[in-house]
Image 1: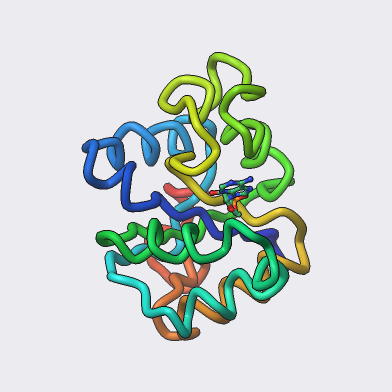
Image 2 (image 1 turned 30 degrees about the vertical axis):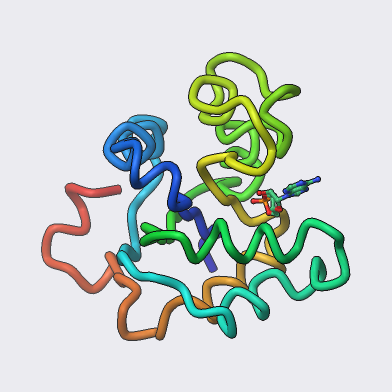
Length: 150
Ligand code: CMP
């Protein structure tokens, strides 16, 4: 099974017109897009997505932030995509994120850190199931032009 991860452009990233630039980074790195949608997330979905953060003092603010506008949620596939994506996205705290990473280039504060990336292969599987139904994920191998889109 090929490795997949969930990447989401958070409401601040969508509002700031950063979606294209963020997607471009994943495309040019060589990953395959297998799922893509835009939505306003419900509190219920976010409480499942952030189930480990429910008791954190910043959780109410996080929920308000994440429901403040639409998200662009994507699934990317490829060799080592979970770990490589984390490196591309940069440290959770933008103050620690290196220049050249998404957060290191586009953000300054942890409460507006532009993008989400799954933190483990297991976490990615759980998150992908939460945000996407199976039929909305592309099986490139079944496409005629799969050989031109390795
Ligand atoms: P992410 O790692 O994508 O998922 C959890 C999010 O919680 C994190 O990004 C931040 O957006 C947010 N977060 C984590 N720690 C804090 C904090 N101390 N203050 C505000 N938001 C935080």
